[in-house]
Length: 107
Image 1 (spheres, rainbow, N blue to C red):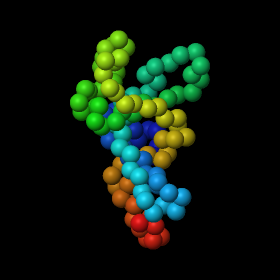
Image 2 (cartoon, rainbow, N blue to C red):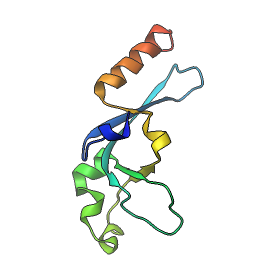
Image 3 (cartoon, rainbow, N blue to C red):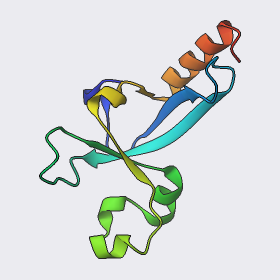
Image 4 (tube, rainbow, N blue to C red):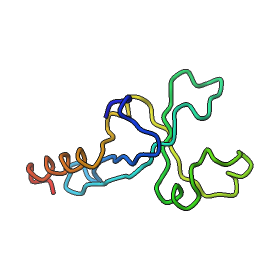
């Protein structure tokens, strides 16, 4: 996935495998919630923030609450670098990756 293709509050997938052979695929779903949302002195690089669908739909966007309010809500968000974004895909890309795994006899 290219950085310029990311769209706010859109769903993305990360396909990996539970095993080294790729026989057991793992699909992680995430929702893009913004870039450089929290910056401090140690951050020199841009950071892209993603949230898990469960907390996104139960509580809303992580950034819509104050820091104090966030302490009482079970959010699951994570940060990706530009090098990690390339592994994300939309549904069509996910299907293509699964088909490649399947054609190799992995799944």
